[in-house]
Image (tube, rainbow, N blue to C red; front, side, top):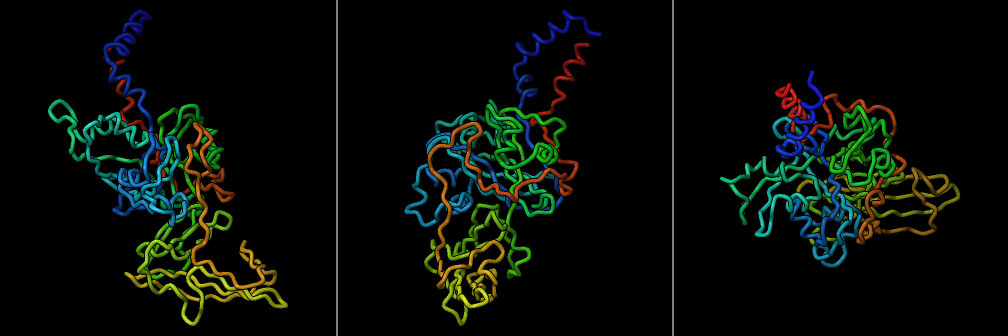
Length: 398
C-alpha cells in the first residue's frame, strides 16, 4: 500500500508537473448517444450569447437560417431587418439543430472560418461552451506543426441527442444544455419542468450532481405531424416554439396547452401560392365561426403538407356544443380570420444567470418522473477525455 508521504509526492507531481492531466480529470461531461443509422433528427442547442451579437452573426456561427432561429424562439418573423436585430450579452436562445449519426455517435459537425483575432479559447467561448478548446484542438489536430491561422476552415463538433424524438410516449425534442455556475441538478430540473429521476435517467447519471460546463440532454414535449395526414412531410416542433416549412411559406406553432400544431402563412415569402382553401374565403390557419342554437359551426383551413412549391390544404368543418373544443375557444360571435396570427415574442434583453432564464416553452405537458423506456442503456454522461488517465498514473507510482 502506498505510504502517506508517497501519496503526497504523487499529488504534487499531478497538480504541479502535469497540469494537462488535471484538465483531463476535471473536464466537463456531456451526454453521449450511440447510434447505428444514417438518419438525423430535430434537436436544440441552449445558447447563452457570450457578447453582443446580431441574429445574422449567431445564425452564421451555427450554420442555420436567421428565420429558423427566430422561429425556434417564437420571435415575430416579420420584424424589420431580422438579421440586424441585436441581442445583448447573456441573452438565452434556442438554436435549432439537425442531429446526425457520425461514426456511431449522435453529434452535429459544422465548419468555422478562423478570424485573425481568434484563439481556441475564444472560439469555444463564441459557441457558449458547447464545445471546448481542447475538443477543437483535438478534432482539427491543432499544434506546433499545424497552428491556428486566419482564414483556416476548422470543424466544430456540437453535442446533440435524438432518443427517437420521444419521451415517456410523448413526442419530444431534446436540447443540449450547458450547466452554468451556481446551478444544481435540482434547479435545472425546476427551470425546465423535469424531475431529478428523469434527468438522471436520460443522462445516465447514478448521482444527481453536475458541475459548471457539463452538458445535459433536456427533453421538451413537442407537437408532431405524424397523425395529421400530411402529404410526404414530417414535422416535429417543441412546445412554445415555431418552425418554418413549405419553402418558408408556412409557419407552424406548437401550442403548449394542447400540443397541437397551428399552421399559417409565414408572411416572409412573397411568392407563395395555394394558400387559400378551395371553395372558401379562408386561408391556411383561418377559422370561421358561426353560432347557432346548438353551439358553433367551425370551419378551419388546414395545412396538409407540400410537394415542391405546391402547398396542400383542406377545409375542415365541425360542430361544437359550447363553442369550445380541444382547448380552443370558439365563443366569438363573428368569423375570425388570422392569416398572420400573433406569435409570442421573447425579450431581447439579457436573461439573469444562473437560473432565471426564460422558461423556453416548458408547459404542463413537460417531463414526468417515470423512467423513459425509449432511452437506451448506452446513454451515459461521459467525460470528453477518458477518466482513467489518473488511475494509470496512480498505478505507475504503486
